[in-house]
Amino acid sequence: MKLIYLDPNSTLPKYRQIVLAIEMAIAENRLKRNDKLPSINKVSLEFSISRDTVLLAYDELKKRGIIFSILGKGYYVKSVEFSFEQRIFLLFDELNSFKEDIYNSFLETMENKAQVDIFFHHFNMEMFQKLINESNGNYSKYIIMPTNLEGAAASIKALPKQDVYVLDQTNLALKDYPSVHQNFVKDVYDALHKGKYLLDKYEKLILIFPGFREPLGMKTGFEKFCFDCSLNYEIIQEFTERQIQKGEVYLIPDDRDLVEVIEQAKRQQLVLGKDFGIISYNDIPLKKVVENGITTISTNFKIMGETLAEMVLNSQKEQIENPSELIIRNSL
Image 1: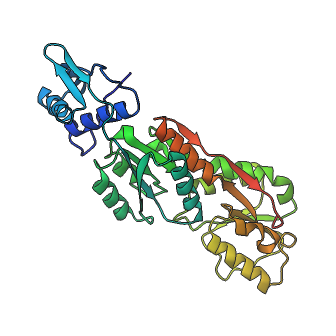
Image 2: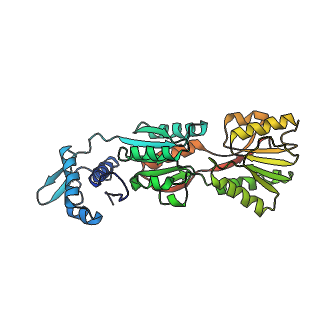
Image 3: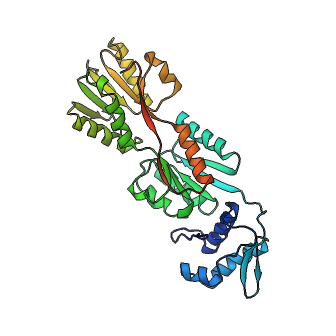
């Protein structure tokens, strides 16, 4: 069982990484009272660091009463009663009702077993980098929502690899990190396939995709479905001043565009679910009642928060796809 992990890309000093690794192993019951620690020589050779670096870490743990040494034999765990509170760095893109669901279910499942500090990067790469750089070394776990920010992976790799979890969106550059994420390509494709019997009565599918905040997988899944089913489709960046044609179905990731489409339909006196259709993304209670019900493709954000908390509490290192479904209502 590996007790010590050192991240060569982390800006955190090596001796501090050793201290945190031992503390975490004790907190997670991977080390118990009187268990022997790896020798100074073994740690030094394994990670190609000086003996002085390892000795500095062990001396700090000794001063705090966490370990003790026996001359000629080595270092052992002295106390498992020390105060070690996990501090979790939680970096979201923005605050909305979906992120609140993740955050609240995460906290509820953690049951006050950690201090959780939440930050927001607002899709700004400079802010993303600044928050990660300032947090590095100050937390025991880092939960990052990278969205589709270009360069996000490089910033994340500066953190201790064994302490990072990726949330909501992942990509090939982050494939080695544990995650709870949506598979947007598969989710969109499968949802549209499930609703194909309803889509068949329409003449054209239109995706409103500004491409700034929206996951690129949505577009890929949409295009793949339309191509495989030989359907007429179009992808537009914005809806402003567009006339809705009868027989069109709009797939709408952003709720601002959803409002615009509904308002335009009213101006044209079109009947939703008959003259044209709508599929929205991400379900909220209001979509159950607006226009007698808006069809949505949605993941379960509460489950996402619960799964993430369980992974952190149990030190799991997996890549988990959060479930998604098509919720069919009057708008289709």
